[in-house]
Image 1 (cartoon, rainbow, N blue to C red):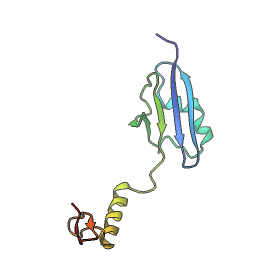
Image 2 (image 1 turned 30 degrees about the horizontal axis):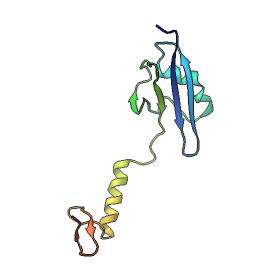
Image 3 (image 1 turned 90 degrees about the vertical axis):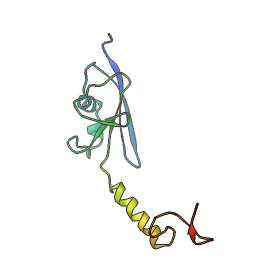
Length: 116
């Protein structure tokens, strides 16, 4: 068995991203890898008690043990609830006549009926 495993830690903002490649000991947890990567020093806004984390786009716990090739991702908090945004967008389409007010289906402008 190898003495070390290779992993990556990533964090991104709209204008800047960091991908840090690391070699860590087997049985290293997600939290230990994040601390070892130095990303917490680079981005003061990261709070591991608030920010969710994941491995390859699947949320995980800070205590999860890493496997060779894992990519640890630190997620930023959402600015808006996606469900609420979709709801507002649908209501706007109905108000503007681009969607049927009852079914929500797209309206064909030329015929004034639901598009098929």
